[in-house]
Amino acid sequence: MKIGICADHGGFELKEKIKSFLVENQFEPVDYGAMELNSADDFPDFVIPLAKAVASKEVFRGIAICGSGVGACVVANKIPGIRAALITDYFSAHQGVEDDDMNLICLGGRVIGYAMAEELVLAFLNAKFIGAERHLRRLGKIRNLEDRPS
Image (cartoon, rainbow, N blue to C red; front, side, top):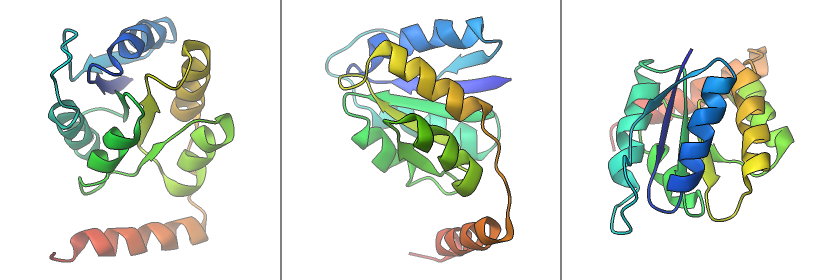
């Protein structure tokens, strides 16, 4: 299963570790950058292509990492079809998928440890959308908002 991943300089080290973790857990990481550590890079340059790939189903789900995870989350949610969240706890990592059909997880490379990141990524990737009527109704309202002209 293809999993998109990206990071700017603030999340580069964590991204590289998570890529190896994905392979160990039978996932196929697709790296959207950065390809090298560059303290002058900008997270939108990597998050936007990743989010578009998730929205178009080129990859199953996405993992975006910046220093705090906040910027990655903000830009990812600007792409129609993306439901991204900054995740810092196990419950939200799986519940966001189960109830809200979250398809992109955002992590803070400067605020979360490697072991916790592994736990969150695995919970996110192994979770399945429940699809209860109330969840579908809520997602419909979100889609309606995305479909409206600005």
